[in-house]
Amino acid sequence: MGDKVYWNPAKLRNGHVVILGTSGSGKTQTLKALGYELPLLFPGIKIVISDFHGDLELPGEVCYPLNAESPYGLNPLVIDLDPKGGGPDLQAIAVSSILRKSLKMGDNQEGLVLNALISCYHHKGISQDNQSSWKLQPPTFADLESELQSRVEDGCKDSQKLLLKMAATFKYGIFSKPQPSMNFPIVRFDLQRF
Picture 1 (cartoon, helix red, strand yellow):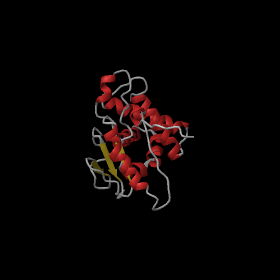
Picture 2: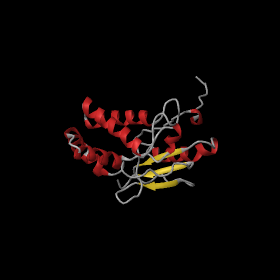
Picture 3: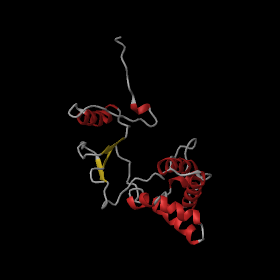
């Protein structure tokens, strides 16, 4: 008892905060206080807020509304630039694994997605063995849809099945638009209309 606990989010590689509580317990105000105070305490920290209700506005933020008319989206194909754990191949593996779980794919479909994603990176001039290429504009899910459609036109029936399985994901569109710049101290994604 009486021990002091310190949390330094600036030392975390990928820090997150989740606040739970009942309605009216102060969750929004606590998040806003954290978002406002952390950059003052840790000037190098970057804050990204996913705002589902449109009520987390902060001074000095850059806000991107994500909705059907927005020119922006979220791109899961953006590459981690860490040479020890990043690159297009590892990003393709991570995304294909997530899609496998969320869309209940089998081994073959996951492998097909992985292969198609790596092709998408190659079409953009990005390869695992060329780290300078990792900074090029990454593909989006629009590129993945085009890659699968091209494979269907070449006679790949498995790609046709995969296109059908991913139809709602492609139609949703949030992953097919370019991701906006995240090079600001506070970025808020306003998701209230999506």
